[in-house]
Each structure stands twice: as C-alpha cells, then as structure tokens.
Image (tube, rainbow over all chains, first blue to last red; front, side, top):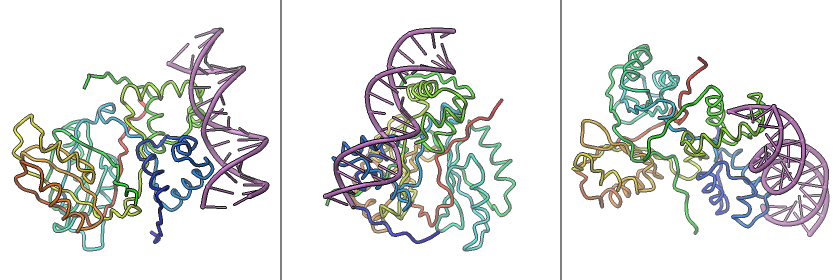
Length: 159
Length: 159
DNA sequence: ACTGAAAGTGTCTTTTG
DNA sequence: CAAAAGACACTTTCAGT
C-alpha cells in the first residue's frame, strides 16, 4: 500500500457525487451538467481512478433476486496476535462473507454475511468458520429488516 | 412494495457477474464475452433494471480521499414498539449513517457509520443521535482496520 | 427472445490555446 | 489545464425470424 496524495477540488467532488449516484452516467452527460468539455471530464475521471479515489464501479444487485434473504453480523473472537491477521484473512476468503472488520477492544472481528436463510447460515458456520484455526468464539446477530443500506459517502459541500 | 417474480437464467447470471465486477462494462463488451448481439444484452439489462434485480450502479469511493477515515458500528437500543420503526427511520436520515439494520433479540438497531475521526463520531453521537427520541442506550464498536469490504453477492453457478 | 442493420450519439486521441 | 475536431466505436431502435 503506497501513500497517495489526494487533492480534490469542487469539480472533482461534483463528479464523484454524480458517479456515486449513477456510475453509468456517461462523460457527455457529466460534462453537460457541469458546463465543461467532455474531454476535460474524461481526464479528471481517469485521474480519480488512478489516484484510487474511485475504487470500483459496482452494480448493486437485489439480494432477494439471488435468494440471499438472510443478513447476519457475527462477532468473532480470535487468538490472532497483534499485527497478525490470519483469522481475518481466512474469513475474507469466504464468498458469503461480504465484510471483515478488525475491531477494537475484543481481540476480534466483526463480519457481515449473506446467506439464503438460517440453514445456509448454520452451514456456513459449520463448514467454513468451523474450519478456521484460531477462532475462539462467535456471537451472531440476525438482521430482521434493513432500513437503510448504502455506500454513499458524504461528499464535502461548496466552500 | 409489490411482490416481484424473479426468474433468471444463466445468461442473466453472467450479465450480473460482469456488472457486479465492473458496472461500466459496455453492452458491446458484454455481448462479445457472451457471444450474443449487443441489442439482446441491452434488452436483458433493461429488464433486470425493471424487475429490480439491478438496484443501482454505484461508484465506490475511497473513504480516505474524502477524509472519512473512521468506521464504526453502533448498537442502539430503542423503545420502538414492534412494527414501529420511528428510531430506525430517524437514524436512516443521518447522512453519515450508511446502514441501519433492525436486529433480533435486543429491541434494537445496528448501524454503520463513517466519520472523519473520533471527534466526528463524538459530534455525531451528540448532535445527531442525541436528538432522536426513543434511544435508550448505545454501544459503539470502533473498526481498527477493514480486511474486506464488498457488496458482491454470490451468484449461482452453472447447473 | 435473439439477430443484424442503420442512424444517432458518445468516446477518446490529438491538436491547439 | 481546458476546449475543439475528427475518426472510430458503442448505443439503441426496428424489422425480421
């Protein structure tokens, strides 16, 4: 991981705002909205990609359409030593595990998992988590309903 | 919310796989990869959007580039009655709150929050959470490091 | 539901200020 | 660092199967 200098101006922020809302907006439309030439926008977008400001363009898919109706969060206590992340890396390799966060205070991780249903979750815990060395305990929290789920970051305003 | 029938075939799954990985992939490129005419792909993509299988196209932005370096999860106990979601809705209105999940067992919510730093988090808890009626208590978990953070769902394979 | 053709439009390199 | 021009490629509609 290299240190990167970000230095974004208001035009960059506006581009990011548009792209966050709809990643398939084309250059020409962005240019029109911002009153600039398409080529200027293209250049900026490429730089934003190069500078790792824009990390990826992602299509958000309805989990229900893929029969992944159960969302859970699991706290995992591990015996990873500080700096080590063996358990974290092993968790990240499980496809159903969407997020793995190393959390303060508990020598542990918080992971976000999507499965078809509670049976799928039990299978995952038995077959995938169960095979990872170094997990001491788990505490599972089932999501009944999601009120909001976005990735949209707050983009600084004018001024 | 209306009940929707999803009935996806292997070609749809392949389109979703490509779009999940890069939402800016051209119709023409998808068509080439799947050996079909661009017009056929266009038609399918539009249907996937209409059927709410594809919910949105999103540019994933590096939180560090926007100076949002602190990620936290907060458990919130509320006195919302069953079926009610007053607190949940109020939480969802806070821009720094990216996710709000109604969780089982605790009469509560789990929220995911991004702020610039711990000062930003304290401000948010005081100024935003503090103004919501019906919050009984909170328990905050600070993320030290994120090992994985994706939204990519597992898309069923051939057969 | 897919193909192929055709018209319209956007992309992206190069050039220029 | 931004704008203009032009060649090429992609999008999108429509008729046909």
